[in-house]
Image 1 (cartoon, rainbow, N blue to C red):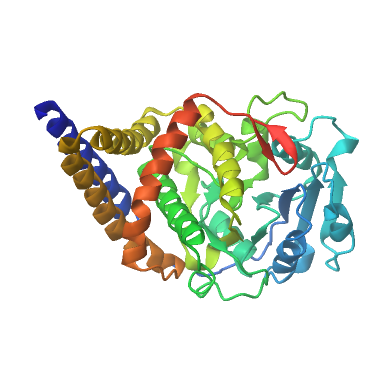
Image 2: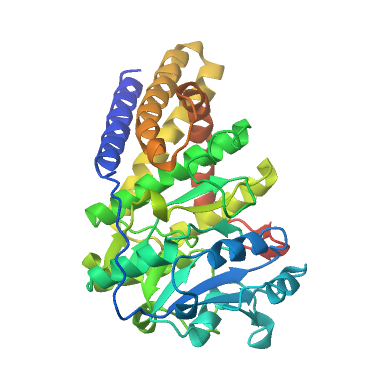
Length: 391
């Protein structure tokens, strides 16, 4: 038991230290829009597959941009959709939206292929990426251009992503996390993504690990020639396009990457409606682990995973032998307290209103999720995503 107590204490201390480190990097700033006199042309790139229920709202939110409409384009690459996605894009009223069909240039559909195709089409000096099920704020393009113009050394800008269940692009971003996040599953997703945003920001701030989110990512067009990939590249994993680009830029110059921690730069994306959809999404995300190579990032991920795995092991042992139950409860209690303090500060930025009680209740669910999906990441799983079998 002495060894077990020792491992338990060390795992708690390491996890708490990691969370303190991440939280200390959370320093939101409001960036004012100051556009240059010579406005750069911006290409907004969206890879869409079977998004007939959400693509119109995404395009509507882009049409509300404060950036001059003649200085940006929206390129939608239809990734071989089997629904009405293409027809909805074609019929959209915004003149800056153009649809391209991926099946006209390749037989191998994937988001990575779609983005590579867009690289041949984009006319902008700045490329901004978002997802077809996302809503962008009206100042999204303007704040991105302001940041690139004021910091010439910046090549990549990452931004926060949050969840919303609303399908109205005029939604007040400060209100979306309260009444809409009504179920335990939706609350857990919001807490999870807020934690991931804090981890992403900390990595950029510390210049130690680089995790991207394709729903809110921008880069200078010239960077693609250095970190991009050909259209007909055979990709082993379906996900990881965002991480690949960000890590490629970091390898060239760590100072060239910036995380825009501004409440007016939050992109809202859709919740997964059920546990099956959520599981498929998370399996897709775990495939990114195979393209994440930095030692600090592996250490950060290992610290969290081993803590959660140890908690799960203690839980299983406590069922078999009651003397382990106290250790199991200690681990669960400590993580719940640490996570609640950590996320209470972060959710202020997102305008979320999930109570501390819910955070504590859902913390064990996160423990189980990290432990199990961390194991699955070691052995990539084949799954179905948007009607396509991938891994």
